Image 1: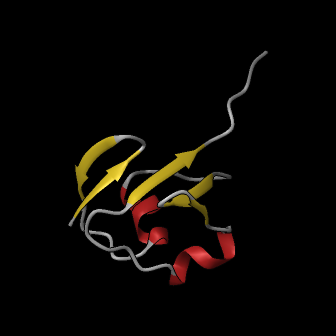
Image 2: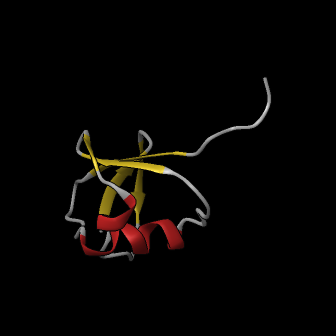
Length: 64
């Protein structure tokens, strides 16, 4: 399915937000939003993706 991930068009196999994180190699603590709506970590496994979704994934960075 075609989605937009962090502003870049992308073709993915994932059907849920949780699967997308695994497919894209994200681990640990991240913040997620789909179509500009925050999705808490506990709801990602049930959050189905659809063609054209705009997903933002933000991971904390170390440093100062």
